[in-house]
Length: 262
Length: 156
Ligand code: HEM
Ligand code: SF4
Ligand code: FES
Image 1 (cartoon, protein in one colour):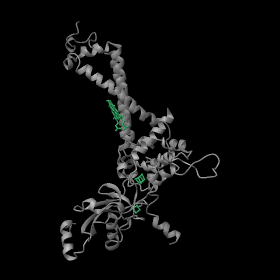
Image 2 (image 1 turned 180 degrees about the vertical axis):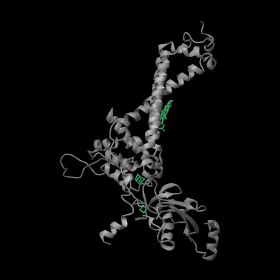
Image 3 (image 1 turned 135 degrees about the horizontal axis):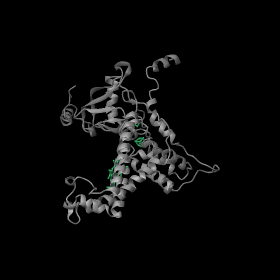
Image 4 (image 1 turned 90 degrees about the horizontal axis):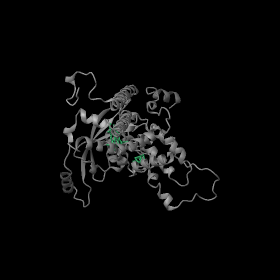
């Protein structure tokens, strides 16, 4: 399909001559090149489909996807819930990079070229942009993502200093979107690697002064498929929509294992 | 929707996530020691390799000094025998473990992985055995060899 594109500047001038409203948001056409997969209608083959929609300078990729689904082709399937970067539902590969569709502005994606949108790589695709997150969550469950304590229950809350809280602050920000794990080439190979997200969420408890399960979690991740498969590629850090320093967190978990072993 | 139609709708894909489940837990310190070894041997190799290159290629008469006699002279000294032996073993263990990692990271099928690793470990055994043997038994002038095959300094 050829792009029916006008340059944003040209669109802007036609807009202002037509409406002339002060502060009007410029609109432009974008083409989405979407990797689609639907067993019921197209069999077991994924295929590309292009949609051109009109968008505004303030629109995010999610808005363009909505426009396709609501106005053009209702069969297009993708996950989203909060639409504000909080729930972690809509991670996908956008121009080859893992991003949340609700946090990417179209104007930042160079709308002159078709924008490629693919499901996360390395997880089984169920339909269009929806992948099966189960392998990802299985690894997450394995690292025991809950407070582990021993001894008597305190009568008050479990106190912690600001410095103790700061120690693991970065890794509390994870929204389990899977952008990191599915950006990792080691995970792509066979899906056996625990992946960055599981390590990030283990880090969140390993370095929490209130938690007593660090030894168990280090034991779990000291696995052939655990932290030692990390090759410090930094794809995860680059992909994380919450800006978590993932590679650093993985390195800190490695260091804790080494000091424990020697 | 009743349970039966739901089940029927799911029929075409049997347990689709199965191939992605972690097959078994493989806990232990092996990969930890491997990781530390790569760094420790890397630091030692840095010294061994660059001193080796300097002594062979730069010091004294430089590269033109290298011949059978030069190698024989070095290996007459236990110092260089041990130096080259450590360098051989560390480089081979380091390199083999590095390639093992690469195979694990890039070979997707178990069968392919197995064959690549068999080839890798075979190469390791051959090179380390031959190398160790040569360091300790190198003789530039083996007695009884045809004179025209020997270097000029072998006086018969
Ligand atoms: C000059 C001194 C050397 C240093 C400082 C060094 C250092 C390292 C380190 C730290 C790693 C681990 C990388 C990682 O875990 O991500 C590594 C990997 C590797 N090394 Fe070396 N090394 C040296 C010499 C050698 C030699 C002589 C060989 C070949 C015999 C070699 C072959 C490899 C291979 C194949 C890997 C795996 C590559 C990878 O994991 O990305 N290295 N090296
Ligand atoms: S660490 Fe970042 S990229 Fe990974 S799952 Fe959590 S929020 Fe997503
Ligand atoms: S829809 Fe919730 S994070 Fe994007």
